[in-house]
Length: 263
Ligand code: UP6
Image 1 (tube, rainbow, N blue to C red):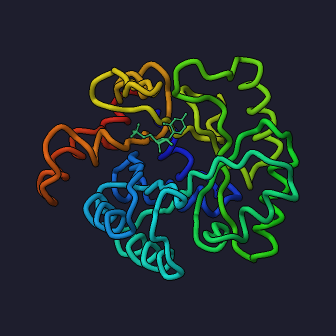
Image 2: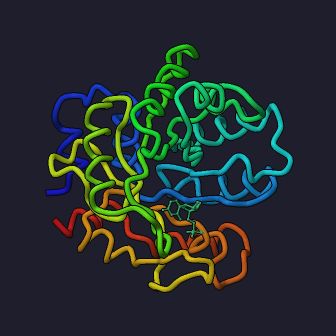
């Protein structure tokens, strides 16, 4: 049986963000996170509006946006609330605890004040998690953390031992840490979920080290929970021609119903 409905049927997970994500996923029958790596706030908003009805998470890199403004998070939050999805800032924190406290809470982007989900590399050790948790606590707002346990890029330096250590670190940090960025199922109990990037309908690469797997492979063979799709949607071979085309493209990606048939 699929993990998401099961978890929802049982008692709450202690993580409101994870509960919220699973509830959205069930309501919208979506396991899709769209990665909107565009350079202007207008483009970002327009993608958010177009894909909004179909996704459970919008992933962004705030530092790619050239005209990020004080009101940008508020606008994103409004679209997210209206279309019922969560905002994931793919910051991949990777520094000592005291530095990530400031990187998370301050600076231009003030991520802790608007993101529902963010992520970190486990490389610095548990201090990176403690720093992020502390920043949340002092902002009075909880954010869900994902650890980058595996990467999709060719030649990345992560090996099995590192991935195992990530699993231990994430378990120790639950319920602040709610899952992983990885390429396969990580936690046999299903408590910690996996979001997998490097997804397109055709398995190939992008010429800069990105490696793509198909949704079928990642869901069926690898047992991941959510798919992260960027250029496979917003830069699909068909020209970007508004809502209908975009929806057509998105709907080719499996829904939660499809996923349930696999288990
Ligand atoms: N991402 C990866 N691989 C990882 C971790 N993160 O591709 O191991 C992120 C990238 C990008 C998105 O930063 O935002 O997922 C993938 O985009 P794409 O579908 O356009 O390749």
